[in-house]
Image (tube, rainbow, N blue to C red; front, side, top):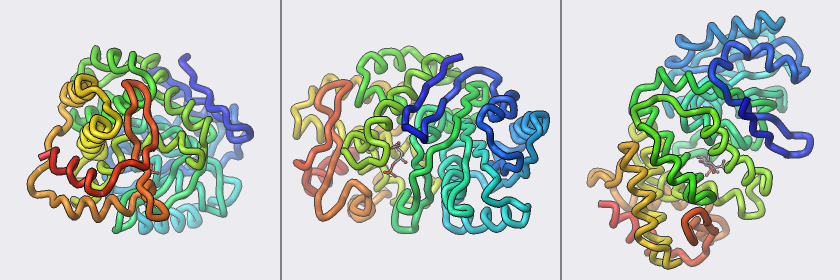
Length: 358
Ligand SMILES: O=C(O)C(=O)C[C@@H](O)[C@H](O)[C@H](O)COP(=O)(O)O
């Protein structure tokens, strides 16, 4: 089975990718030596489709799961949900010997992972991602957290999962828009680390609602290698995974959470970052076009709506974690498949790149 090992000393884990793995959840988790009580955290879209199967598999392996469901959508990535879930877990008799199973997309993974990071000062968790965003990106690497009213992902913790179980067949029940948005992150991995992946992604059918396990694993492996180099984003390497996210997060936070899907905002942030790479690094416009063609192939937005005010975006993006100590650390491409963190981007450059999206 395609397996990506994430090598992080005593926080190492495997990402397993294969069709039908959902029904093997209990058996796979039993290799981890965890205690019996666990909490499956899912959302109102995913739980009716898959929670029964995961629960049944866990029970068959001797586990005692409780199921907790939050409303689907970005608005659930909130401290209100964190506090509600912690209370529910306590009421269900969970304690420091329990573990969490995050079943769903990026919102569920980030939220459930954060609950696991703080519940009884930290309990183990397993990710079962069910969307492209989560299968190629957010389930790996241990960034967990929620949004603040002031910006995306501003409250969180690093907490690595014990295992990631990827079943590509879960993609089949996604709505087209939710399926396609995730490719913004897969394209990001190609842009920053693997020019050949740009070609591989261009061969996918955007309507297929399925990606071969091998390709998912190769895309995930790009992220895994970056995380191994710089687990806590202190050395600069992990910041490269934020390509397209500084302006993207600003755009996403400028409309009510959930109105624009994460990948849609990242598509626009990616185009802005490409234009800045051209201006500051002389990145070839023809290579930018290859990335933009891919975004278009997955019907991701290429233009910013006039209704979204540029100054609101600029205000929001200045709270991004890449702005620190008065410095802007902006991720730019140096060539197709290679990126750097640059200090040469000014706020005026950013304003210009946002305007160029109109
Ligand atoms: O895992 C990372 O590191 C990433 O940057 C992946 C991003 O795609 C993801 O959206 C992440 O949550 C953003 O990180 P943040 O630190 O800017 O919140």
